[in-house]
Image (cartoon, rainbow, N blue to C red; front, side, top):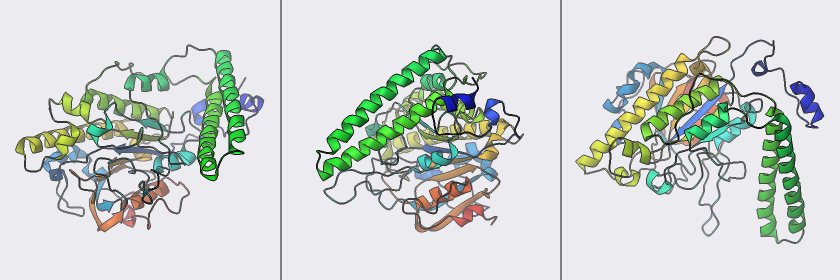
Length: 420
């Protein structure tokens, strides 16, 4: 049974175009992709350049990226106006939401920009998006609430994969379950959801207004699961890509873990398994792997301490080496149309904290491109307290995601597209 007939037979109201991924003879095209990398406690202050424009001077800690200087952009003076917690550098990083809301109200987030992108870029891939995270505890890594960098349309945390070995198995692992067995499992999942939905409707008719609002959120979550099951069903008879890469070991030190995840991100994009990825990076494991005894929070208070400053800079230098490695990988891989993976992938690297507990002028490193729209090789100095969401809006629109605003954005960062 071919894939189109399967979709028809399964009763799904979704028709897919002829895709190169399924061996179509249609013209080969490289698709737009987005990667969001997030850190918890930001970086040491000495990493940031103090000069601007095309002639800005790289700092010592940025030297691992020197060969990529013309292919990246640094943006200063971005901030998230609702950021309040210096120990939660990624809770609202990709959402721009006022998570504290009105005093006395419960915590509330909004959809993250990667999930907005996934709605438009991820419909034809096996995974609409991938959320990757680390095994670090939030209290030591400065991430705050959430299970990854990503939040769904109800502002609920999206779980992340925290094991490179499991990520590999999900992307490229051998199938032990037959097609018929998969359909039976999916049918059982759907039956359980149908029962749950029926119970929710019954509860809703008897619930108070506040409880109905909560039940409505759960109903949306159920619909999200239903869509995921439908997608899993569509792909259940499609073999996973074959890659020349061994499955990672279960336990890796922090540096090896990050390098392996960068490899797997590259492979996921190269095989068009997904086009949107977020990665909440490790800190605790990185520090222990570098022989640094401080935890992330202790290290964030490096001011006035020479040993802590040296340790913080050692960590940042290694993070930049690994980031440079990732850019190398993107530049090396060829797409189906002969272009580089780098030329069709926008990558953002940063967080809600600049350094220590500083909530303004947050780190923003941008690399990659889509249609040569971005003009790299500069350190852009924005007006003070420019909305971080202006960056997310700009990147979304660069990938042709049809949005007019995002979060508290006030407009695009036009400087990203200008040559000077």
